[in-house]
Image (tube, rainbow, N blue to C red; front, top):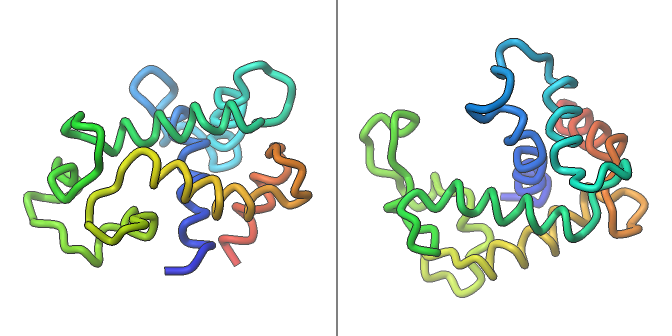
Length: 146
């Protein structure tokens, strides 16, 4: 799995809040509207950039969402629900294991946070200033579609 694939995770983190049960349905929004809405919600202080503190909050929210069992780690047991259709999830299907630093098939919050910050943020932050703008998110998404 390459870093661009993992970077797509951050794009999902940014737009995930635009698609939750309390917001407009994804099917009523264009991709660009989903990105813009998710970006605005991730930009907690409304200054037009997602800074490291805001990124940390989004990464934590994403980790908590993936940790279905609520035990503070992500394991194969967290892969259940209608999207898995009752089928066991193989190690190869668990994209988050890219971030499993000690290869124990258990992803801790620290491993997840470090991985996202060290790989994904660097890829999306085109000007390497430590913050992500809406333009950088859109450019990243456009590059993923190529």
